[in-house]
Image 1 (cartoon, rainbow, N blue to C red):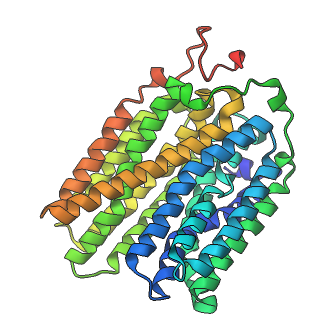
Image 2 (cartoon, helix red, strand yellow; image 1 turned 30 degrees about the vertical axis):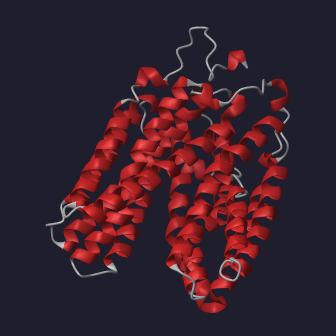
Image 3 (cartoon, one colour; image 1 turned 180 degrees about the vertical axis):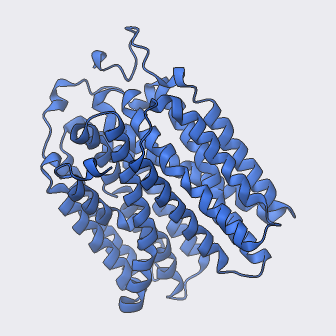
Length: 402
């Protein structure tokens, strides 16, 4: 881990990407408070938040594909940052007064979110090489992201206190564009000429190996998404509403712990062989949150443990991703992994919400259902189906055909 951090440019990329990605961790609370603090409805608040997330899920692969096809990381990132910033400003000014305009603006802001995360992950192999150092780099990246999810809500709370809900959204937009500009100043973000030698037709979604990887990601994300609902329901059941916030914070702390441990002690085994057991174990650990008869303190320990395996799992997914697609599609492929995780989160949240709302044993059934979905998705990611066979066929990940 330390050797990776000593690599020239790595601390700069990690720190600037953290700043550039902060709007992602600030947006949920910022948008809800933007509406509620102006006497808007929770329905409008949820619509704004969902619209932002869905638009980002669509926009990231689109922008990443443009980067892959043109090789121009810096112009795409900067243009997206400018558009997203202007759209956030429009959202802040119109969300409640002109809801239709506000929703349209937040859709633009979400779609134009700069694809910093997939871009950064496409750079690691060139910066640190392959093997354990690459695993450590991905794990450090995940750790930095978890730091963002811990401090993002705190910055939002401080921003609202000092600037009000509208001013906080403007602050969030400013943080995003400043972070993106700083990120793009790194020499690695200069225009690439390698794309001129690559074939640009097609998409990483044409790779059966990559699709199998995405299925694993979507399913494994389901129990992660369910936790927001099950933690809230558990907190309500024990009469301590603030408990849900502690559960989510402990889950993020567990994820940060797992990322740092994985960066410090990267495995020697191939990523393709680790994805299935890590995904299965991650989904199985969430079963601890179904034990609502446990004392509150013990249940919170379970919430912490559910986060520990997420960064190791995602680290192996991102390590394997470039081995399942063509080199010319790596940024887009990373973006699809990120979007697939968001889809899985949404599936888990919606399923858990419906079960908790309609069943007396809703928490138990929600956890069992989403964990089972995650385990099933992990089991289908058999190593031989994820590995490049090297048999001369035209595979999406075969660079020789590019």
